[in-house]
Image (tube, rainbow, N blue to C red; front, side, top):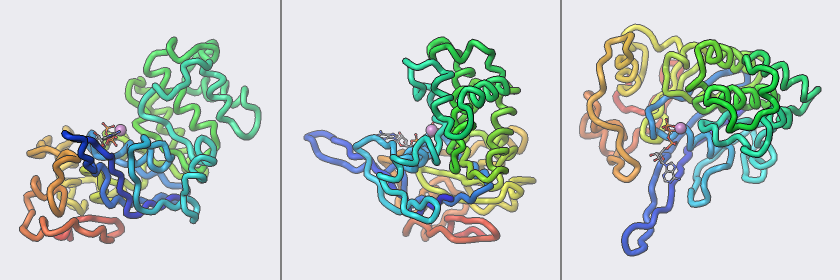
Length: 305
Ligand SMILES: Nc1ncnc2c1ncn2[C@@H]1O[C@H](COP(=O)(O)OP(=O)(O)OP(=O)(O)O)[C@@H](O)[C@H]1O
Ligand code: NI
């Protein structure tokens, strides 16, 4: 459904004396997602998850430069195609509830996303499933709580009939029942043939619905692994960062990873994780490791076996 290859995104910044500086926030990032699949994208804050979503939808700020290739259904995803597919074939559940139109009643907003069948019925059905009481459809975004607004955003994607759904942290602020419901719905959309990219901080949520998990670090994909590899002490995982991330979970060893993710303004040479990596050798700083296939997954580490 979607194939992103060697994507990089940078922002032009003006420093002292009006000098221009390129700030690289995404570096040679690869990802693909198949119909019927839920791909979870996990990574800490600032690792480039939302920017990837915005690059796919073509909604990056105008000072962003994008390089690399993006293919949707086998054809290049040009700016023109992005415009015509956005909100129709490709739907975004945005990370911020600010994306709701403040001047339109939320029922109308969801109805306007419906492309097949009766829009009012589709909206009423989905609101009932998400426990949004009748009457909510006549309200404006400012009248809703954060959790309710999120449920409205997920509703919009669910009724859209999109082939590719990108959900950027869709669940924070929702109660447990609503979280379960929206996760189940995203899974169901995939089971019915859509491709779902689910962006989350939370590996636990990812494990519940995903087929594969892509691990982001400092603006690149360090590993893509089947969900079943996230088990035990992380022996089946490929990249030292994924292993460390897995072991850091409270239900595992709860061992924090030392150091910090580098800022885009101070990326290390070579492997972006090398400065924090226990396996690092001088070769790691020679160049960014190529993405390579390994045991039914992908890894970007010269030492991974
Ligand atoms: N308009 C911008 N100009 C300059 N830098 C930006 C801009 N937008 C984002 N960035 C930087 O790009 C990096 C990636 O941001 P992004 O929002 O994709 O992170 P994220 O993985 O979605 O994080 P979070 O989990 O907090 O949502 C960050 O370092 C951020 O500061
Ligand atoms: Ni984000």
